[in-house]
Image 1 (cartoon, one colour):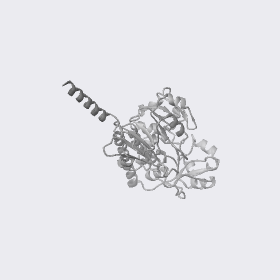
Image 2 (cartoon, rainbow, N blue to C red; image 1 turned 90 degrees about the vertical axis):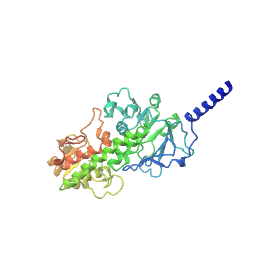
Image 3 (tube, rainbow, N blue to C red; image 1 turned 135 degrees about the vertical axis):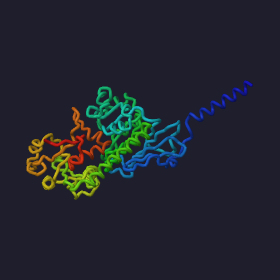
Image 4 (cartoon, rainbow, N blue to C red; image 1 turned 60 degrees about the vertical axis):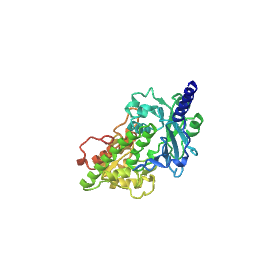
Amino acid sequence: MKHLTRCLAVLLTALLAAGCGSRPAADLEDFTLPVYRPAYASGFEILGAEGLQSTILRTRTPWQGAEGAGTSLCILRNGESVPEGFDGEVLRGEAQRIVCMSSTHVALLDAADAVQRIVGVSGVKGVSNAWIAARSEEIGEVGYDGNVDYERLLALHPDLVLLFGVQGASGMEPKLRELRIPFAYIGEYLEESPLGKAEWIVAAGELVGRRAEAEARFDSIPQRYDALRTRVAEAAAEAPKVMINSPYGDSWFMASQGSYVARLIADAGGDYIYKKNTSNRSLPIDVEEAYLLASAADVWINAGDFATLDEMKARLPRFAGVGCLRRGAVYNCDRRMNPNGGNDYWESGVVHPDLVLRDLVKIFHPELVPEEFVYYRRLE
């Protein structure tokens, strides 16, 4: 009887170990199930495998010009093993301690109701998020790509670092691999669709085990955005011609017709004045061409770092006589600046394209929007 009891105990222990321990590894080719297929974003997808809880977050374009060079993060769950053939980054369980190398990462995690998991930020003093700002002395400042304080970063014990690339891979990659800290590229800034940028909320939710909540949060955004866009299309009679930006050095960069800002202008019932750029990036024009465009525009938005109309006229004396400036039809997206120079337009504006759109509708068709500006203000 004792022998039988002992055998049953051994068998039960083995069964429990099999159920709770590491399961047989799946093959990478098994991860073909679309756990989440974005409706607007083009830069990511979430894949799963039949009978497994682990997922793979794939970033298709982690930096400019990275077509065909995507990155992957495998999020292991339920004691499952790394898929055979997978050579990307591995996160064992959902992320609990996160370092963000961009303030937009903070906004995405906040929208996924996971801002409390952030333990380190690049440029923490410039972050506008209220939760982070209230704890700026506690949240670790890790420095900037190219000048990262790895000793400080390591002391934060992160289980995930969120990266972004500009013209290529982040210079942090080799050191993070050496320190065995997983990382993921968040490429929302490369999305041209305003709703596509915001849809990265779902990717952030997947990292922290809150995908369902993140999907629900995102789903309401296109509803509000499209409702306003439809109202403008039905009610607005004429589209004002819209000039953008200001000089950067000797050049004036103008967005493409398919860009984020051009799409927002069109959806808000405006007519983006620069038609020549049909590429997939901003292109420089000379000041002479910029002057001709500004002279023909009805309204001017995103006009650099000018605080007042007088300052704008003083620094751009040639433009002082154009109609936009004379009428005071000049607007900047700097209404929510924090004391350290951080601009919340570039942070929370990413996850609130409906509010950015509403601001622009108020500029182009003020009779349609009684609410106050959120991100924009008129230069006085």
